Length: 540
Image (tube, rainbow, N blue to C red; front, side, top):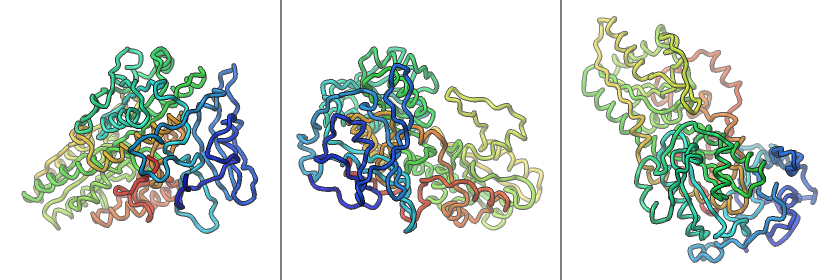
């Protein structure tokens, strides 16, 4: 087997054994790396105890090496189940892979979270690289897999389902795959759907999810009871940060019970608000579909005197869709997102800017993320906060509120009459099938997930980190949300494109600069090409 090519963001850490096979002591081999320079064994920063009768969950697995190298590893079935047998990976006999120079990812390849460094910078945090391993922990006829989709709709859900089913079936010879109907509550309401390559053959051409979805309904004990009763040993959970938190709790309960069940998460959020990974699936499609609404608003606005088009897009806490749709369109005059506060009245306010732009151009288009300006609406309406079944704050319709505010302002100001059109394409965008870019991306996510579970990894989510797919511990993607950094060059590019004011004070800017910048964000690094990023396909 040849060595992997040298790639700056993937570090091949040699292990204490040779031949690429694990020794019976899986725990030691996976956490004890030998240094390439002096042979010293790195520090392991967790007690990594196997679970005993007390049923305590092991702490996060963190491995420290030379030059500031840190590996945030994911759990493995061998961490709490001793003497598990391993088997040759069936991929080595798969005709489709016969032309591949190297079938398998090196067991200790890792992916760097940060790739923009200085010459004296520490090597920093890494994650385990995704892809097929030489040895697997499940035999094909032993696997009984299930797939569940939770939360809101998103382009690409059916594609992920299809590729998990076809990947398990075609690459690993798995024949027992079921879908859980209706989200988490489907586990304990006995609703399942048998899944085969034939039954999922063309579902990627449809929007939504063939499995159905729901918010809430998470009862850990009932879910794990159902998994155990059905004999399921691989669980694929597709959903956003709330769903991934639920997946983490399910994994912990499975681990506590000592079950041989691998749990993998595929992160789904159309808002692109999941940290660490480069982007979430469905985002490209959402930005592309948003162009249709923006174009319609622009046509309406420029066709009449003092026309204003207001478009509300998705973005509960993060304004990525609005920002990228605005940049892609070039027809937008003002973009409002949750991360950048704005005010309506007075000098430098939104209403004054609208007046000025109408005098200059005779029309304008405003794009507003659904989570923008919520504090202004709450203040003006004295509304009470409510939550949905997933615990998300129920948002008030900022697009409708903003439209009324603009109309009221110009109705009081007799100097200028306006013609305003409000467009809300939110649910239309969520329900469309994924585009070509997202279809390819969903395939890589699905394959990365199933390669990981077959190799015995569990309690992880998958996603590209700087273009390379990796296995990421659940806690890393659920600890906070990915948000637009308004002191970043990307937001500056938008302000330059729209020529809108920032609406924020110098003090707000200084406060924002003091906040920690998220480690990964679309297009915020000069060597990351964002929506058109070339993902690593060699591991899949």
